Length: 314
Image (cartoon, rainbow, N blue to C red; front, side, top):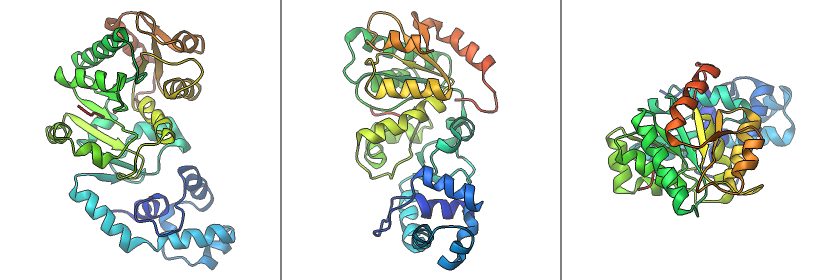
């Protein structure tokens, strides 16, 4: 049974079943929660009630309109449930505590996930990098996937072509577990027979903070990057451009926000941004077998109540 807080969160933020009223962004939602308290208290209240409680007229009208979507939203949620996709909010059991602890008000208000949800709160290894990776960089990505599997840790990545898919496939083929956070449609990703089979076998979790049917955008790719870092004990950037691109922006944000221990590959196959990322605070990795040592340091330096974690396209 979904709680009032969970239901209100979905009604206010979800982009499913849109009817002309713009849902709140995650940042708008968390500001609203700071102002009014538990979102479930908003259910059943009139526009006048909300204005009296301190909301502006436009926001009060928007909140009332969004909360009126309950019937249409129930249909959408039922459809997702039948597809094997859970819809989680920070008020639900199963929402990753790592995201709560590490991202704070930057955490997504909604997370759609398919697979064994407990994997999302297990210590894991993130691997990210360029889509157009060199042959040497590709071998590094594969080696990191194998290393994560040999250590018994989930491999977390973004399921994009290049470094992401190479590392994830290597981990999976070595008998490991994979967590994927695609920037494209989650429903499309789950249509792959290999992904469906891996989800069924409890070896893959696919999750996304975006509507499950939404297409790829560069903004979504940038936005989901923080989830890879926040779900991981250590995230390795195999090849980054210097000063631009998703790998660079994700790594610099994670270093600033201290989301996890950020590592850069320093060897054959590295990108032009790897050395500048090291100067900004990322740890260098020159041998993939050294990953275990870095992980040990991460575990001793991180609060164990708020550890790391990610998805696959084969």
